[in-house]
Image 1 (tube, one colour):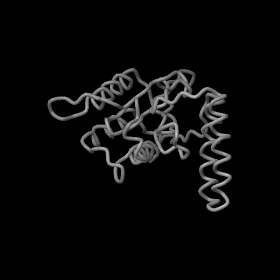
Image 2 (cartoon, rainbow, N blue to C red; image 1 turned 45 degrees about the horizontal axis):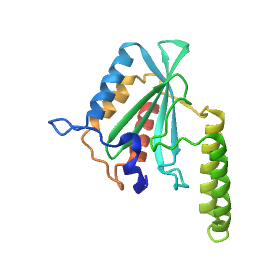
Image 3 (cartoon, rainbow, N blue to C red; image 1 turned 45 degrees about the vertical axis):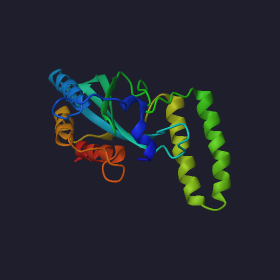
Length: 201
């Protein structure tokens, strides 16, 4: 949710049409419509956080990943990642939930991620002397990110409501297409929280 979120590389310079609407929204709606016609159904959803920049220790950028199956065939999976930023919305599709690129363009290898976490660990140890709760949150957040990067697999999917469809996501995008990015009231985390809730209830 931090100020750096407005400059996420994957969301930069999204074109706007003559009606003032971001073409990213139209593209996402079109992709979701095709996927729904191909009978892909949302089965699980996970709410995630990642760094919005190399110097972000709190992983302030929020997004969701949706696990889909082709109809009732549980063996045919597709994963959808949805990010929201100042320039619009980004939809990524993958055969696994480890296929996605960071919205900030940060693609650390295992070694770099480990060194980064160790570096922050030393810094947070110093912070912990004065603000132990803040240090704890930072270290847990960084540790969770490291585990995801190392395993290549996210865990903790919640089951979508039984009647959930990709049309629900499409409707959510349409309903919010004209809401401008606002760091305080409508940022990546607000978007991810509300879409996450919509698929669960």
